Length: 488
Ligand SMILES: [Ca+2]
Image 1 (cartoon, rainbow, N blue to C red):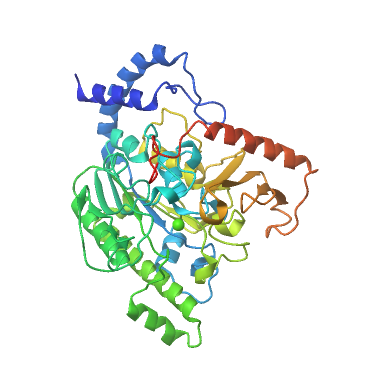
Image 2 (cartoon, rainbow, N blue to C red):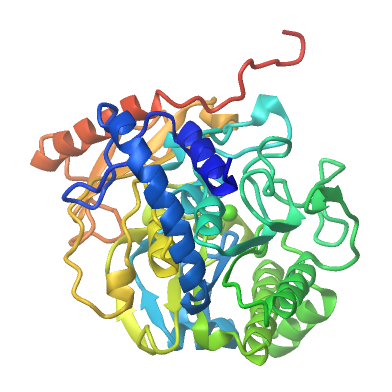
């Protein structure tokens, strides 16, 4: 059998009886079982001819570098208002493309946002409502085997795909980066490192080069920057476009900058608190690493045909001195400080330098945006909507859609989930499963201080939409079956 046909049949198996059909009026892909068998044969032949087309066009397509940083707050770049910080490299990147001021992470914590980026779906619709961790007694996600992840789609469009840095979507087979579609993986599988230099988590070494355990020396930020630079060198001249997902773990805890970077901050800002100095040093060191990566991209001659996207997976953690600007609260919270993050997209000759957008968009929207830029077809149901027209300076009407955020967690949350929902400027929000939902109008009350009450016309609308989303997510397990807890 033709290997491309075999691949396509495997794909059909992956998506089950989900559609192969065109989008609905909102650009969303709809489930359509009846027409599935009828169209599958035609689609298979189209897919094969599509592959040939993709190969021909591959050389014209942009490389894509998706930089995701970890726990960077909305106010923790100098370009987003930080007065005590210098982040010239990220600031220059932002200035050379389009900056977003209403961009949201899909979740106020790590794994779910990463699941949304790579699936284009709400995290609880791919089995990741909360953080994936080492111990089953504190694990709140298992990425669905049937979820089609971004590298698989880009591979079909003849891209080489790589992830460098933090994976956080599974610690073992079959949910490793290579098994889920990446051609190359250099980084760590876990939720965080307990130490930026020995890279261990709960004593485990999750550092990998593809499937192989490795034990490199050095600060994680320096390692990931260098590995990205090495990757560009390997890919330049290949003639094949690439997708690099560069996922730094900085500035996530432990707040552990290199000693010389910390000393530099203390010298520059005498009297600064130790807590804030450490976080600034960790972020400025990250900024320096990103600068080196972008310089290497330029030196390799690839930057003119590369789309670079930068964002954070959730808001800043206030307990370690993060700054979320004027937004209320921080990481773990459904208030704006937990989910609104910096974002920019840069593509020389395509995206206007120094441009800005107030469009409301989420991490999951980057999935179709990247696919559209890459010419990769999406033939299954997703929740994200491409923002490529906005990036290219074309008119794109605002999306009329309900938005949802979920986080399931242990500890004081008791294994329960808590939620936010938004339509237009109205947001229904709770920060714990034990709190009532409150309605806010973000236009009049951006700091979420004055709840509007249950009688407001939008309360029931959002409450019902959220209930329906919870029903839909109930079809997706978030633990591996069967669950085997110790002693059971
Ligand atoms: Ca995070």
